[in-house]
Length: 272
Image (cartoon, rainbow, N blue to C red; front, side, top):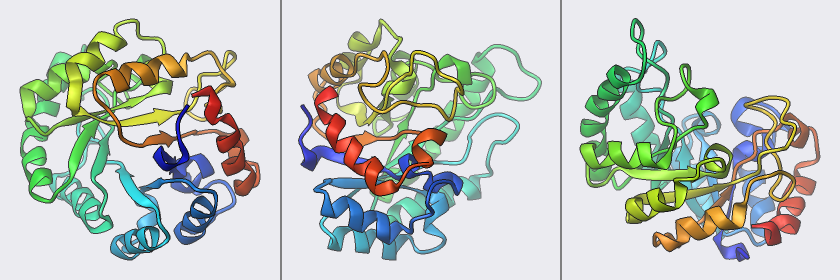
């Protein structure tokens, strides 16, 4: 079972990243997590609004770790960011005091089919970004997404994909493992073992048996079909001892009182 000091809230669980939910401020969310004994918190860039340093300081003063920031802008595909936009996300992570900035890669490059051209473009952008991140004390962490997000959101689907890319790009390039995206992958355990200390995040939620929306219907841990303890064991067997971050994109959970959501997370920790 995960202890509360390892537990982190990703604020997407309360809908803050998409302007959903009850609309709690970062400070109110921090206070509610601290009061319940959460160890850390992960913010989204949409919440910072030029206040990254102040929000990070507030969280630490309340006794919480700032465990990460979501996310870089897309690096590939038709909505790919400029280098200045990517640099701005790194600056925000550094100002917040976040040790990890998660990467969602973006989709396939315009005019291409398959994945190879897009992955080459991704690697070309990651190499200088990793060097800049390292200089700022931030780790970039690739997050593989479920293949259903292929095309428009990602070109990396498995931990094995992420490890292969990381090894080719930069020694400091890390990997985030999200239950929602990898629960189906039978190669996960050996891929995590190969990743080793590149693993910089474990994201908790569940895959509901009758998922109604591929983006906005994630389940609370234990309410679905993912073998969460087995995934956690695979990640920890690779050497990971860091935070366990609850990240639940769900219109259902966003419609509930945020305090009740936080209490339910604690009730469901034995499922992890």
